[in-house]
Length: 620
Image (cartoon, rainbow, N blue to C red; front, side, top):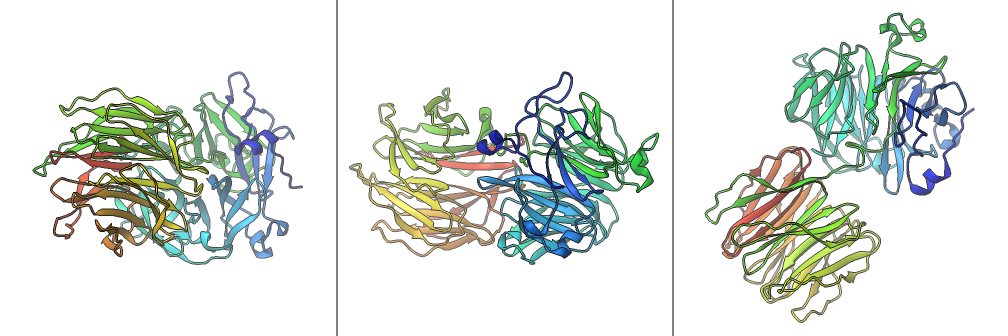
């Protein structure tokens, strides 16, 4: 009988589970449940790893398999026999999991309720599934020899997909640090056994899929099986093959054998927040062979733990994989954060290498603004802590950071400096809107002012004009881009919609010395666009300044000579700079940062004509 039992505290807190009770020498408080895909019963079983007897009712915390009551067809139910993969992910205010069965069912399922979000019966021996941030799902099929991204975000029966050919495809894992999909398999042309990363472009309705060969690595042994995030370092991945298990260093593209040794026939691997490693190894490859060996050469009735070592056995179960039931794509509870680095472009156009100006690895966002006296202010957002301000004097000396906002719920920041020497920092509080905090020319910070109550805003940018006005832009998903003006006298006007494109995902802005304002936007699959407001207040139509479909973040600044620099993050590659001359012509892109895991970017120009480019790389 299928049952679902979640502790009320977990539901109330929006967590995947209450941390299991710690046992001496074993599962630590804070560790997640372990979910096994039992091919005997065709269901997922969530176990408390702190309970020694996995045959007891006390050990099983949740279970699921597709049923008609949950919206699955009879054909989909029949295709769910041999469970092959399942991954939990946060989705909106809740959670979902991606599911694959080698008997050909792929699905996206609500968690913990278990209702069908999307499903397809897809022949090809499905081995892996991953839920992507846009709601689409990535599937790997070993026999069919491909990795596909299905447009599951477009409806419960959506069939559109993009395909990448990969023989014996076995794994799919999304990497938010480089915005790539890691896959493992065999090159159909060279026959090499590889780990590589795919770029997902296009739009959610019409995705595209292509390899980024800069991340490709030849496996140290043949026949790759599993790829999974390493819970302590976003620069590493777990990788297993028929003959070994490894930690893969993304930056060095190197494989090392972990401390517990290079076990063979490991079908799944992961680690808990406590560090304990969780694995399944085929019973047929054990000595002596386990009970499951009598049935096939891939299953086991036992989940193995290391650091500390232990086993958990479910009598009669046929586990192919067991997953640490974590909703995170990468480092536990530390996604998309890193230190801040500063690269400088001299007035003659020469760039210097980036230097770390804030080593706090927990920074999620950064903003920057230069005052008329030549000082530079860099703001950093530490999620869960607040906003900090660090000053670079005109002589190049950096001060210590000062906390300027203790609101722990802020998710985005922007800043702009006015000609009178005041500095404005805009903060976004989800569900509440935008707040404006002012630093006087004398260096005194005032209390925040609530300037926009729209709780649906997801991004903010700001720019100052020579006449003393301040413009704050906000992004409302599905509702376009809006601009709100603060006069030189300090009066805020109502917001005006300046872009009706509901697909915009990021924005930046800069004011030019001639009084014009430029706002840049990213449209997934549509590149980067620039919209100008004349000094008289008239908005022109947006013009595409880059057709690249992979940009993820923007920063912009104007220089005293009237040129405009727009910086865009190309995930997994670095940052490019595109320049608008005073004549209005745009240059081609010039790559100015090789930090391939850059997450966020900000830029500002000093009165002397230098540019400071601030970046946050997740992999130093």
